[in-house]
Length: 181
Image (cartoon, rainbow, N blue to C red; front, side):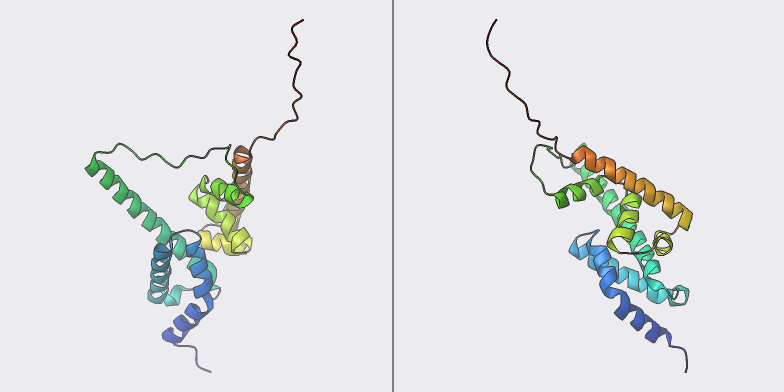
């Protein structure tokens, strides 16, 4: 049997991994941006089809991660230019009032948002996308040992961020006597 042609290999990659790659992008960007990320990732895969390993999903995640990083850098530069042109100093980030009632999912989302891109990506590759350490390391573009350290640090950072966001427990305070003695 003849090996598949470039077109057949690409079509197989697309059919097999489109859903996972789209989900990866949607969890990291707005819908319109995610669609662009998926399209650009598959464009890179087409151009470099001979470089795509047999276990293609981690490689595709790695390409998508770099495409997202490039888009973030571009957006940051555009935002900075707009601020300079408008004469604005700097935009304040969203604030979090610990007194607000938020669900566990919202707390996790907020905590993840406070992590670096590398830490957040390490956690999501393993916990959300279900990749093994070796496959996640390939997706992140680093060695297994480096990824293991990155993942450990990310877990520690996430735990610290979650602890910082947890509302203070309500204590059972007994009122003191108001008598003057």
